[in-house]
Amino acid sequence: MLSNIALDYSVAPLPVFAFRLPPFEHAERVAVGPLFPAPSAGPVIELALDNADAGSTLTLLWQLESSGAAPDWWYRSTEGWARLPVLEDGTAGLSASGILRVLVPVDRAKGQFRMQARFTGAMPKVAAILPHAFSATRRVERDTFEPIAPGTIAKLAGLTGVAAVKQPLRSTGGTARETPERVRARTIERVRHGGRVHTLWDYERLVLGNFPQVERVRAIAVGDGLTVLVEGPAPLRGAVAAWLEARASPFARIAVVAPEPVTVDVSAELISDSDMAAIEAAVQCLLNDGLALEDAAGAEAIRAQVLRVLMERPEVASVERLRVSISEGTAAWRVPVAGTIHIAAIQGATRW
Image (cartoon, rainbow, N blue to C red; front, side, top):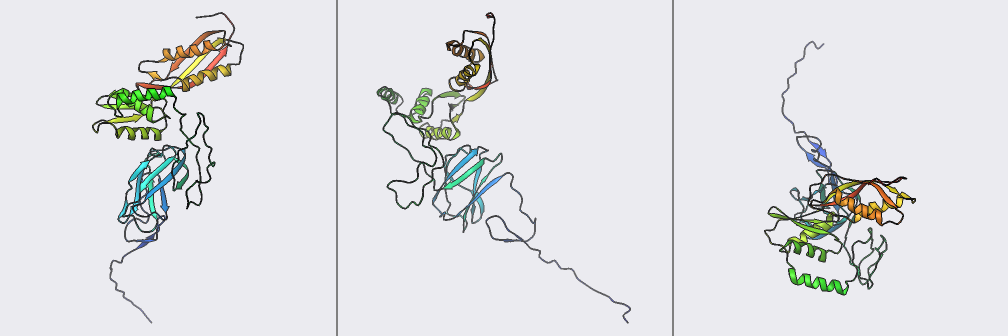
């Protein structure tokens, strides 16, 4: 019968391993440390692409439903994650739909080419990301033309080796054929600026002449730099900035930004027997499409324009009361945006 027992043991460290399976990768063995990798500081969009050879150019059409913060672009190299060189960003930092052109680095990791868009702010809502993207220009022999609806272009003439063509977006931009008067004016402008930018007038005329989709532009000297205000989407402003930098002095500091929007509220009382909806629509159209506030111009300047629109309408007998208020703005060039528009019909004597 066993009445006593003694045990002896020694302690020796043994390696502990865990296996982690990142996205798009094979399982990797992790020695010591956290079981899960540290999370990214913000949201990430990661793409894994086949047949993206090192040294080739990758074109991706980003179709967005909403804009977000500008991302940083990264790719998986043989040494880990590294910055991805961007050749052309037609999305202006994923603020609008457009084509992104990147160069596939020669030190890309084996297997699928992996790239990431890392955000420090809000991530855009992406409808689709389409590879092998390119833009096309349509030439028509008439003065008027309509935008091409999505899905209209189904094949390419004279181009072999293409299995399918997809047109996910409607066409944009375009301009009518120049009139003889416009050709003469452009020739005079060309003689004056010589295709180079020196004065504020040069900046404005060159932008208007080379970007027909820009309707209004203003150049303002700010300190030792220059601010060019362009009405249009972010990709258009990015294209204008790149175009100007290629023609300006290398010492010029140029910022191409959008004018500052300011909200305008209008309330009025009219003597009229007509429906006020059409009159309110006319005032809203004036504020959204027909005005730009220069420097010190404010509510009184807008009030005069609104009064002119009201008095020009035949259904308005008289304007009894008109009040215009404008939100605060500090920029040199501000663009009104229609706020609350309330126009009512009354009966009574004039109270000016």
